Image 1 (cartoon, helix red, strand yellow):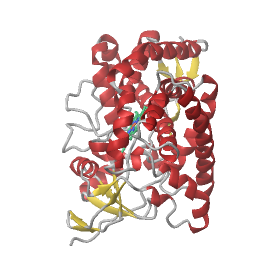
Image 2 (image 1 turned 30 degrees about the horizontal axis):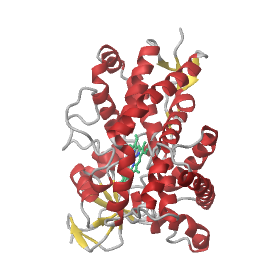
Image 3 (image 1 turned 90 degrees about the horizontal axis):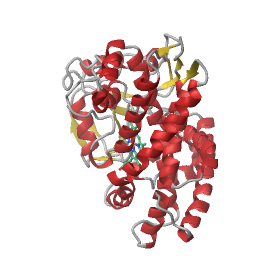
Image 4 (image 1 turned 135 degrees about the vertical axis):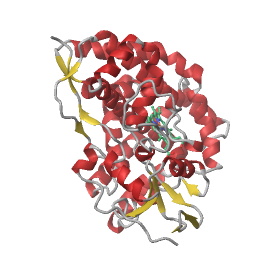
Length: 408
Ligand code: HEM
């Protein structure tokens, strides 16, 4: 066996949150796998594209990892067990065969024709949000566009009344803060638990309503699948709803914010995209690679194995560093350069293998609509503030605020 590599100094600090890519490069150069105590009390970090892709596809790495949330938290175990039990049933944290069965049910709600039906609605919401932002010369793109848009879209897809949108944003912010934190505080854990319970209570009522009065939406499809015996009512159904609401918010917000920031700090790329809107799909692909909104995910070792001379034991936590894979020079030419014409295939930003992002097509469409409308509406859009304010969550990389000016 090789000696265990550990990061030379603690990874997560202000400099890392502002720009993790130098630290990732240093790790990758030192070796493909490191042990770090900074994440959930200890985890293996995978640093290159080949290994990240392998861990996401290989069944020797299990998606069941919610136990890490209550591990080493004796005093909170009781408090958090409701949260852990409910979320443990969500697709993201399941292996086959349960994963295969539930994924099939959910796939039906994300078919290309279903997503296409949403396009006019998304165009309209984006146009309304930008019109509101237009009312003042300067505005915060995150607060006024990137934060509200995903919740508008997912609530429409799920058949949720408009009035609940504010609660959903707050609930899912709490969940993201907890799930994305490498060592959640007790307060973060409590807030996430309270929000998840509030979400569940909301869905219990909504699902009951859809059982009697189905519509043409995702939650109605779910209760129909329940009636056919394809998904259990109760916790299994509730956890998918909670996961769907949470999964797309923070991530999409970050893609939109980081993408606008990337364009405005690379004026030549921005001009090129204005001139050639046909590059939009490739530009969105590049934004996803350049600053991947999900910087890492997690897996548990399902069976003892040796990787690059390291003994990994059953139950060990493994963090495939998607953010590091996205900048791996063995996979991408000049990985630290933003190139909206890059033609090197999709990155691992949406994952790969059985858990590849269910919302990927929806997100791409949403993002293309936003970037097209932003560029068309504001020819002289610029940053109000030269220093970006990156968030404090190492798992979900994105801007806290993006103040922009569109007037002269
Ligand atoms: C920029 C936006 C997004 C990014 C970067 C993103 C990223 C990811 C990644 C990396 C995974 C795989 C995680 C793993 O393997 O552990 C994933 C899974 C998932 N995503 Fe997304 N996502 C985005 C938007 C969305 C949206 C809008 C939705 C829903 C409407 C969504 C729903 C899901 C679901 C349900 C899964 C779990 C799939 C499974 O376990 O089979 N995502 N996403």
